[in-house]
Structure formats: C-alpha cells, structure tokens
Image (tube, rainbow, N blue to C red; front, side, top):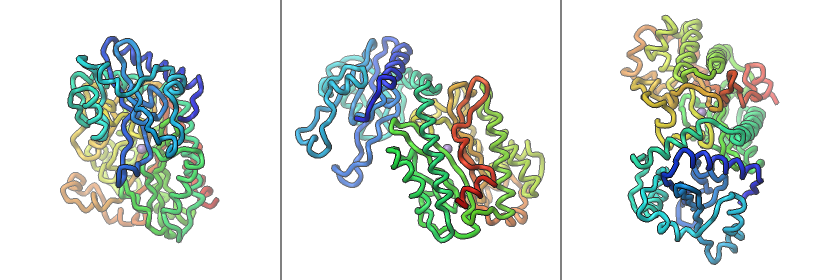
Length: 459
Ligand SMILES: [Mn+2]
C-alpha cells in the first residue's frame, strides 16, 4: 500500500461524506475491480483500481469493495492468500487499511450477507470479470456499460462530485502536468533523424517510470499524426517529418495528464509546416481564451473550428465564410475530432458513464461528422478540468472518401492542399483548469511556440 498521509485521508473522507449526503439513505456498492490477466492467469496487467473507488479511497486496493449502507461506508477486502507474503510481500493488514483510509474493514466473504434483500446501487465496471463479481455480490445482473434505474442516482452523485475538482484533486493534476511537461521536453530533446519513434517514446515514458508514475493512456508518438490514435512506434524519423506526441502521466493516485505537441524531426519547421502550425496554434490560443465560467463547451469547439477555418482560408486551402465552413462541417474534414474532454482520474474523465458525464442533461451528441466526436458539452464551471486540443490532419481516410467530402464542394482547394503534403497531422493539446475568473493552463510550461519548440528539439 503506498504511503497515505493524514491530509490525503481527510480529503478522501470529505469526498465520502459528500457522497453520503447526496445518496441519503440509498445504499451503494463501489468495486475497486479485479486484476486482469494478460495471457495466463498468473501473468497480470499492472493493477489499476476503478477511478470511482480511487476518488473515494485513494488506494489501489486489489479486489476491494466498498459498501455504503445508507449511513456509513465499510471496506470489504479479499482475505490474504497463504503464500501471498512470499510472492508479493506482506499484504497490509485490515487494521493498516482501516487506519490509512479511516474506514472500517471486513473480509469480503461477509459482504453478500450485509446487502442481502436490499436494493443496492452500483456502477458497472468496464471489464466483464468485475461485472460478474458485482453481480455475484449483489445477487442481480450487472451489465457492462449499463446504468440501471436503481444505479442512476449513484452515477449522478459521482458525476456531481468528480466534475468539480477539490484542492487535493487539483494538486494531483498539477503533479501529472509537471511530469507530463518533463516528458515532452525529454521527447523533443531525444528527437533526431534516423531514430525511431520508439526511441522518443522511451525517452518520454522513462520520465514517468523514474517518478513512480505510469502513462494515463497508450502513448501516441508518430510521424503519422493523421492516424488519430496510432499505436505504431516502428517508423524511422526522417528529416522533414513532423513528429506528433500525445503522451500524459498518471500519478500514483491515478490522476491524468494529457498533452500533445507536434515538432519537426530536424529541429526546423518547413515553411508549409510553419504556416499550418500557426493556424492550429492560433485556434488553440483562441479556444483557451474562450474558456470562462458559464461558457458552453460546444461553443469553445466552434470557436476553434472557426479560427481554423479562417486560417485555412487565408492560406487558400478553404474558400468561403469561416463561420459557415465551421457550421457546415467543411472544417471537420481537416479537424475531425472534438476540441477536448473532461480530465481527472480518467484521461477522458468518467467516460465509463457515457455521455451522462460529458453532456449536460437535455443535451445530446450531434449526428454529423466532426461534431459527433465532441465528448463534452456542458457549461464550464470553476473547478472543471478540460483539455483544449485542436488539430489539422491531412488524413487520406477522410480526404479520399467521396461521401464525406461531398459537403465541401469547391470550398476545399485540393491542389492548394497538396502543397502542404509535408504535414500529415498537427495537434496541440493542453490541460486547462476552469477558475472563478477564467482559466489556468496547467501544462503551460511545455514548449509550444515555433521558436520554443525548435529550441527544445535542438536541446
Ligand atoms: Mn486529449
């Protein structure tokens, strides 16, 4: 069990007290989740407790299950196995866990009796094995990705809590941002023509490992930025390539950073790369300036899309009115994803609860290409953490699709676009905390302007 100070304990006790207030007398079960096997039962993926559990208890207690009985929380833990100390070290005693968390601890075997005959809410896990365990403990079927009527008040209570970050959460996000910043600087400095993307990835992720952290999501480090979630690292980096790195730390407490930078392998942007980079950077600058309490997030997305449109019109790539180009989805052919998402214990925070978390009640995802990839549409409020990540991609998967590109008509100048062929994908992403007066960019320390990026690559 990682060290747990009394301040951290108090922060988690306060979160549980707030959840208890929101739930009232309605009982609930929160599972930390089971370890997941890789290829055979004894070879496991690194254990990651559920974010809801981490939010309330702060400790990745394998297989733990918390029960709120309508008045107080109890933690149920699997009994230590006879040879566990030999293979894994001495497990923390129930007394140790109770002292660290401030919550009474009982053996897991006693849980079913404690909830028998009661309608207990829970949140389904993202993996089937944990859902089956929840089903067994509660005596009703828990289906992956399904929020039953009984479970909805618990889901809504967790969303209400986790949507606005408390001081302890903001401190964790700052830790993640700091490590993420160091990783990006290390990645820039490690970039040279002739190296592979994996070498740059190693330089970046080693920063996390050295800090006892891990990656918040599979790193994207690729000269093929047009493949939005590429997990290939074998490309050799060539003079003239741009390298796109979307890499973020996860703190030992489970909190995420999520940053993208795009830099030239040679250390110098070509003139065409520079022009498109400046368009993305300006869109990001405007979108960040648009982050204020009360602003609807979808409008931040549209602001960025309009800014991209205006830059692309100036370069002769698009023709028309920027507001119409954004509204009609012409910009989406080059910027096919949303401007960002919630950030917290999950890199897409609370995406396990579906659009219930990201979309305000009464708002639904758009159907059209581009806007349908927007993961968040709430009015921004102080304490929310979000990402702002516009991009421009010359993606054959889109541009060669006749049906998708029909909307553009003659408003997309393909001949002019072809002049920018040394750009495949540019994305610039920062983590932003909404404050009372506006915003704070948590990842501001990472080189971003053309001159700062070029200097960082030169080392
Ligand atoms: Mn992101």
